[in-house]
Length: 279
Ligand SMILES: Nc1ncnc2c1ncn2[C@@H]1O[C@H](COP(=O)(O)OP(=O)(O)OP(=O)(O)O)[C@@H](O)[C@H]1O
Ligand SMILES: O=P(O)(O)OC[C@H]1O[C@H](OP(=O)(O)OP(=O)(O)O)[C@H](O)[C@@H]1O
Ligand SMILES: [Mg+2]
Image (tube, rainbow, N blue to C red; front, side):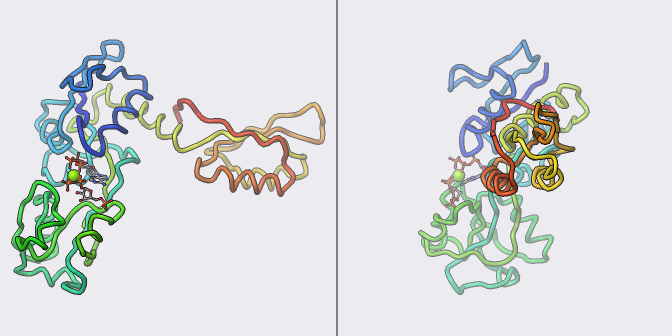
């Protein structure tokens, strides 16, 4: 039975649970349960703090887990990233009061507050900068105003928390993070199935199916707009001068593609959602 670590709280938990559900796993019924078995799929889920997941997976206690790339690196666990899951995106940045610092080297000898001391410490070391790390549990942006640090290093999503505290980002990007699948045993057969299923969910979320009819004379121009993943399906219609085309299109491009096809001369342009996929 494959033992899977899933975030129980925080930014990653809801989407992780949704993706597993869409991938056909049962998950927990009781939102406070710490584990749940899914015998039909031969897996058992363990609901853990995202920050702890790399430790459990790295030690080999659990086979595979979903966590953030930043949390994985911060833990210095033995586990490695086997796939990116395209959610929980964030950027890890340095920030300080406007004008206080401009370059990374300005942090030499300064106090930097963070709740990711492993990640930030490794980054500073790799760049030959020695700072004093002030390790905090959260609400790191308050550290400068309250006088315990000169700068902070934290997750930035919209940037509104930084702005509200009068801080501005500076220096290089520490890390581009997203939710990832991690393991020390990427060769376990159950992991390949889990990975394929999650990738199927990503495809179903990221793409739509577009069907349209187009005069044969415009087929090449139309399929250039909808090349699909490999190649679009082209089927005959009763009218010998027209064909029907079906192709996958990135969801974000749907309306641009529909406009372009219509302007070209395609008609009966229909868009449908993909429920599940194996690519
Ligand atoms: N706006 C965000 N705030 C915090 N973490 C985010 C955000 N967007 C994505 N993430 C990612 O979520 C993970 C952190 O999740 P975690 O549950 O530890 O913290 P959290 O969402 O801040 O929850 P809490 O602070 O309530 O414990 C990291 O991988 C981080 O990059
Ligand atoms: O750029 P933003 O969209 O403002 O988001 C980033 C902020 O959100 C998170 O804080 P969270 O609410 O999790 O509180 P915490 O600092 O106590 O973890 C993160 O630690 C940043 O502070
Ligand atoms: Mg937080």
